[in-house]
Length: 136
Image (cartoon, rainbow, N blue to C red; front, side, top):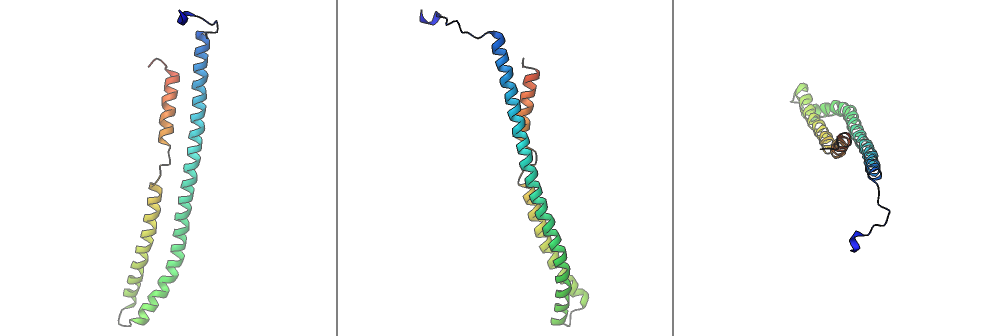
């Protein structure tokens, strides 16, 4: 029969096991490289979000203080019947609402991505477990 012909180039068990181990090591190296790249991407995204939050907060504080003082006196001038403390309360409330909106937007940006690459970590754990205990 044609199926019983042997070519003489059949790989040995040792060669097959060595090939499997080499493939597993290559897969592990590739997963580590992917894990490192995902960490770098997530760190970059975190830096961008933190930078946007800090710059926005700094601008909000400086501008808010200057505008608060100016607007309080403008409101007091425009409505002389309002006490000065009421003018400060009105202007302060407006800026608190604006600052809260910016902080909420920054928080949502942080929540839009996961800083830890879950899929790569899971796959890496599975492969390490398989390499350490291939019988399961």
